[in-house]
Length: 454
Ligand SMILES: [Zn+2]
Image 1 (cartoon, rainbow, N blue to C red):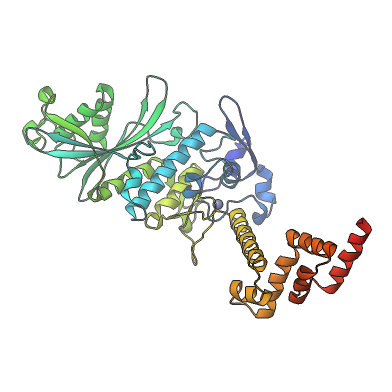
Image 2 (image 1 turned 90 degrees about the vertical axis):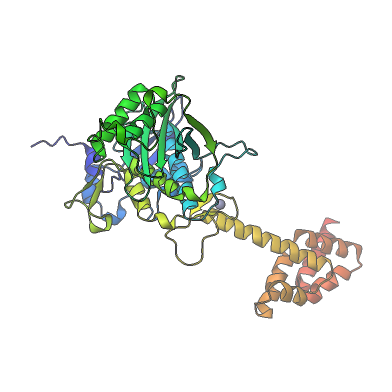
């Protein structure tokens, strides 16, 4: 019997999660998150409720909108995202977050929660289009098709990292349904050393003959990639290989490898309402890229998770996301503007991103109320008048006490009272006592104190 099992692997839940006790960010040329996993013995000796566990509502949206301050708290909740390594590159986390953010945003547009404009390039803010659309037209036949592309900077060289858990690239799938959409996932290496994860959707209005599609691929991908993609198409798309050699049937776009040059008009285009199905397909493709290593496992998993088990916790978060695409809805914090998920929350929609912002907003509100009330008093309004105006729903006794408290803790008013006592006019003192802001005892104490000072 082999007892030398991987301790971390043993800890892994069917959801691909590794409970961690702590996480820290190590800065440097290539910063990384270092996790301190719960130890294996704990898994069996510690009561379940004492094990580190994720917040019940942790979702892909939390990753999508994580910021500098939220990174470590989130990492503590999720543990490692990409498998069982206790070190994960910050670059990988950034890439995973960028992809999550793009997908959540596109899905929100698909759901009608955001305008298409958020996916387009914006000249004012000089932001690039999140989804680039290209129209291609065969000038001879008039046939056209659209290409939608979405691209992310990644580091494909990280071992066991983000990209390592994706399917082999290039990756090609055909959507079955009314539309004739083909999607291609690819990792492109820039000459300057950068890697890009690109998902490209080719959307044809009607069925395209395999030979035509092969020609399209050879137009838009370099030799080796095109060959690999056509090879994939033969393997994964039913009937694709059989049609080989039936050149006469490949008539839709009527491309001819020798004469493709000059026959295609290619131009950038704006997204429109007709593109919603294609945008939905892009989202589905991007989710699929994260669901490698998901298996049916009736022994370890439960019905709640459709009896699935997951290699990575990131895959599990994407799986949860895929189950509620129609609900994707993002709110923006009324105080700091940070985005957060509104899905899976019942009752009154949340206004703030966090408890901190909620408390701070409440304090802001109290502070403003205090300013307004003191202003009203300074302008000559009486306590009961102010109470009725600012706390109309409260019993007048309670409301008056609140107003008096706000006035009696007002440093400037205390100074005014002191000055009034010192100068002996008594108007301010009389008013405050009459309104119940300060009592006679307070005034006497101040008189004594001021005499001492003199
Ligand atoms: Zn906030």
